[in-house]
Structure formats: structure tokens, C-alpha cells
Image (cartoon, rainbow, N blue to C red; front, side, top):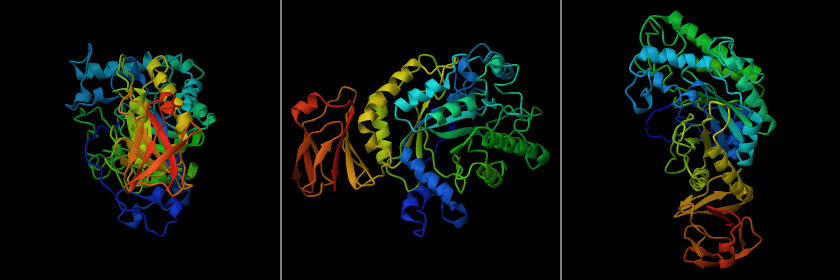
Amino acid sequence: MQRHRGMFHLCLLLSAAFVLTLENASARQGAGVDQDRETDPLVLKKLEWFQDQKFGLLLHWGTYSQWGIVESWTLCPEDEPWCQRRGPYASNYWEYKKAYEALQTTFNPVKFDPDTWAAAAREAGMRYVVFTTKHHDGFCMFDTKQTNYRITDSSCPFSRNPRSNVAKELFNSFRKAGFGIGAYFSKPDWHSPDYWWPYFPPLDRNVNYDVKKYPERWSAFKKYTYDQLEELMTGYGPIDILWLDGGWVKPDNKGQDVDMPRIAAMARSHQPGLIVVDRAVGGRYEDYRTPEQEIPAKPLDYVWETCMTMATSWSYVPDDTYKPASRLIGLLVDIVAKGGNFLLNIGPRPDGELPPVSLERLKEIGAWMKVNGSAIYGTRPIAPYSEGNVRFTRMNNGMVNAIYVGADSTAALPADIAITQLHPRAGSEVTMLGTNTRLHWEERGAGFVIHVPESLRHSAPCKYAWVFRFKT
């Protein structure tokens, strides 16, 4: 992942000249000048579709899962907690890198069955998937022709498996299950000799030579990047999102210009309407922003998606700690109430299966979504967005959902829920999703109070959070 810090900055709304239905989808970060505004109607339409999906699955998977370590980052010679090396090769960087790259020769996830992954995600109520086709270490989980450092190379035992082209198999399975498809791709490539030139030792995450002094080498890397992305855009079926990581690869940082206008034009010539997410770079080619491991304090004026781990690590770590379902549901509700999407990450095991505890969490989330999904999908924010334990979402038919989120996994419905900043329309019914019961409510000041009968509190249709619907 990005592994960066910093505040999120609000951007300007799109010009009122855009039609209302596309306004939210078109809002851009830093959109102060026309060239930073997306105008392609197919992209704007796809962004509106994206905001309706709300809940997606992110998968970090590669050879590193065999060691149960952080993805890629132990190769980076920076003194950061996520870069720390462990194990028998930790004391010698070059021995460690050699052993890490040799993981290709032992990677054999014979239990990989993408249909089961897609079924589990669909049961959880997820609507789109983003898969790591290549992380910063440069190992390709697709059948690229640009390098032998790939899962389909003969040096990898899994190359003899009929499902060896993992990205293609996974995209096909999820697409068949009705998912939107996102291809994660790392712009930096620490295996490529044209990014980390072996003539010089790497000093940090950046290119390790002066691109102005050695323009031919950088040109070769740009071509390598372009050619790999064209492979993904042409040989892997319809793609909805190109999710580019490694935001330090940008023109104003050591001249690391990969020519995003040319890349985006090529990608959209093959995938019309493609959403391009050039993470942490800004401008025209970051169609939505991706707060990492955090939720903004308030709604944002641009399209956004929180990406967050279900456990503590992006990649598989044995005995990792997973967030309880109550917490994950609370996060989803809070993100959606603020107008964002929730991209929840799971790290598959080295044998090709999802960790059993992650499957348990997906089932619990799915049980909640079966009752309350209509308060999530296709909704938009409505002020005041939240009040105490309550989060609000707005439906396109004018109905409002007040979602009461329990403080923890043991919390129960209270007898009374007071809301001070919204008020049902006179004569409006207040209903609770999952029941046929019309609830009694009464005005209180500028707001109102919902009375929840004891019978309903003891036999609630779901756990952890409850949705009350009314018309304002």
C-alpha cells in the first residue's frame, strides 16, 4: 500500500454546468483549473455507478504470504516500522532480497478457488473487487510477457496449474458473480532493473538513479509500465477501475514521470469509461481519493473510498487479529453516511484459501446486509450525517435512514432513540428494517424520539446496528 502520512485536503466542487446526477461523481481533488476536471461522460457515469456500490473487497496476495510478512516493504531500505526485516536473512540486505525473490520458486497455492472467494464476498454484500496484480516488489500475479518474475513463469510451481494466471481467473470469477472489477497495479517496481538499477544500491522507495542523467533507462521503465498496463487492459475482460499505487512515482518527485495522460488514454481506448485512481497524486487522473486505514472526520467534496484492513496487516500474517463484525459494520455505516465507499482488505493464505476467521466475518456482515442493505447501496449523505450513535443516509426516493450503531458487539437496542437535528414529515411512518412493525414516535423540540417496544428489542432482526426509515 501507499504507506504515507498527511492530511486530506478538500477540493472544489465541479462547475454547476454539469448535470446534478453527475455532480458528486465529477467532484475532483484540487480541481481548480479546467485541465484537472474529468469531462468524459462515460467516466462520470462510471463514477456515479461506483458511488452506488458502497462496499468492496481488496485482496493483497503474493509470494510474501509464504513468510507471513508485510507485502513488499521489507525490500525497501527505509528505517520505518513496516520495512523491518526478520528471519535468518535479516542481517544482510542482499541475502534477504535474494531469498525474498526466490519465494517465486516455492509459491504453489493449490487451494486457490476464485469462485469460492467471489461467493463469500457476494454473501457479505460486497459489490466490487480490487486485486493486486502487481505490488511494489514487482512480482506479477498475471501472465505478463514483460518479465519472468511472474506466477506463470516455469520457475514457479503454480505455473503448471490450469489456474496459474491468477488475475484472469479471479476477475472472471468475480465478474461472473456480478462484481465490478478493479485492477491494483504498483507504479514503482523494485524488481525492475530500470527502476532499481543494480549498478546502484537502493536508498529508499524511489528510483535509485538520476532520471535526467540516464533518460534511456527511465524511458525503458516507462515502456515496461505502459506495456504491462496494456496487457491488463486488453487480456483480462472488462475492467471498471485501474487502481494505481505508489503515489511517489510522479513528475514532481525526482522526475518520475510515467506519462499518465498517455497511460489513461490507452487504458480508456480499451476500457471506455474506466475509472483511473492515480493514488495520492491528485489532478485529472485521480478520479477518486483513497484514505488509507482511516475515515475522514466529515463528508468530503469529492468521490472517495476508505481502504482498510480486516486484520492488522494488508497481507496474510499467521495469528493476526481481525476486527469484530460489529466494528466492521460500524465502519461501513460511518463511511457511507459520510458519502464514501468501504474497500475492506483480506490477505489470502499461501495455500490459496481465505483465512477462516475472515470468512466468519464476511458471513456476519452478510447477515446484517441482507436486512439493511437498502440503507447502504445507492444512498447519499444527508446533514447532519451523524448524531451520537446514529448515522444518516438518504435514498433517491426521499426516504431517510437513521442507523443506530451499538457501542460494541454486546450492545442492544435502547427503548428510546432521540434525534435532535432531523424530523419526519407530518404523518410520516417510522419503520424498522427487517420488521413489519410501525413504530411510535413523538416530537421533541426541533427533533423527535423513536420508541422501540420491548418485544422488538428482545427479538431484533439483526445484530450490531439497526435501521429506522422515515420521510422528511
